[in-house]
Image (cartoon, rainbow, N blue to C red; front, side):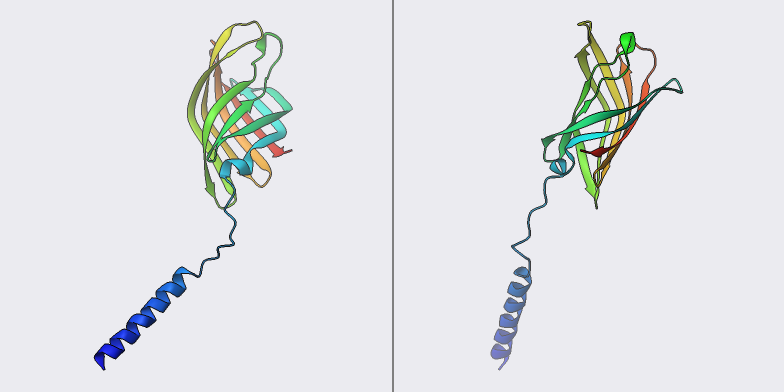
Length: 162
């Protein structure tokens, strides 16, 4: 009798285990890569502050390009004019995290170089870059040190996906 009760319990346990492990839906579509969800062009308002004074307040387009499933490359548009023109700049491999419907990218510091309109190579450093994506909107902040300029540009951009 004890063996029969033990066998019954084992069969019941096997049924429970098999039932629990097969409860998932095989029809669930995999989630789209986080970078794919937010990659694209965003048009909106860019404000650049230099030494505490607003230097520029314009409508422009920032482009976020999928680098990997979890990273983006950022193309920052040209800004300024004349001798104060800062050419388009790039920030590569911004790591992304997702929390609910919000996707965030952060880079503490990124250094690159670019050839300006005069053909001169200039170094630049982007510090404290943070971008937050919600729905079809992006909010971006960063500090830019360009060439030999003794001061940083504090940039804020808010835009919507095209």
